[in-house]
Length: 456
Image: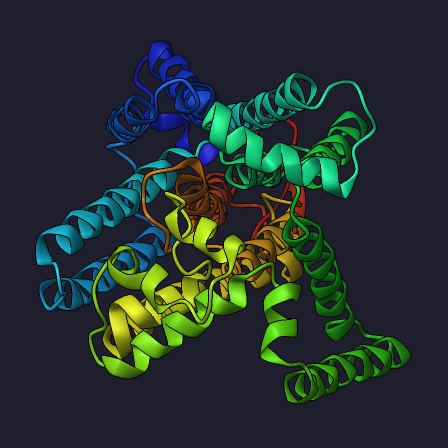
């Protein structure tokens, strides 16, 4: 348990309760897709109250510690986002539907704040990380089970995976891409909280392999490779070696130039094929944004006319359009089409806050955490996926992908809270042991080495 928070438990049972609830929340996400393919309505109705109750109960254990600067900052950003997004919801073409979706998003914000507070305790954070790893393993089991059941014991190919994707949705009621992302992102979130172990790394290879090879979509592979490349470029930018920085900037300029050239020479049909039909959906979202640029059409308004607005008869895009969690297949374009410019800025502010916080965790030295690279990778992965899929930080607030995105936000912010708690405790120990000068690293409490003073 974090020394700075040891006073918050008046009874040993409270610590057990906190860690038990920390295991429960990820396990609820892990079993969601098992319930979903059996009864969709039951899964959706069960997940939100169950997670909200568990998070609220865990937060009740943490009533005594004062709010940290990180928690207050996150609270202000989420509150501002909810307040501002209320305006486009009231101006939507269907205010009742928009307000219902706005309420779902508000619940996710509350859950993030509650979980963030509980994760300040080191024991609770580790239990939560283990639960996320178990949830990821459950996802792997589910995907492999459906592959063997529907395809058989044959080596996967792109064609067989495409058949599996369609069959899993039509006959087993399982959106394979969404289940695969939940599996991958639960693993990434878990690795943010657990010390790196060889077994966990091998598990990650299995998770990423199963979730990409067996999903029948090229997007997961592309996002994974792009995220790894972006993480490498980020590390190159902060490198102190001039050759590394030089080649990093050269690679960035080359990528930007290639992207600009591609937009000039690639045709609409080629982009549609390359993006598996998403380009068509994105064009509709942009068209609707230009029609109502200020307030947009409101949450979930893509259901009204997406199919009728599609540029041509494309089987794939029509299939995507009627998918429960499909929509425009881009959080950013969904934001423009549904919330307009009014809703754009507070949501982008949340994205920027998450990226800035993850960057700090990756490249600033801290006394309480060493998993910053996982935090930055998870942030990049989430933001890149937001360009090609809807569920996430600005999704529909009803499936594991949305919950995991806000859980990741809570994990990132909780690391700053844990660091602040540690320095408060260290300063109290410095006052207790008055012979300990500033910036001296010595053995203070429990035989562990702690740096006394602010981190450079």
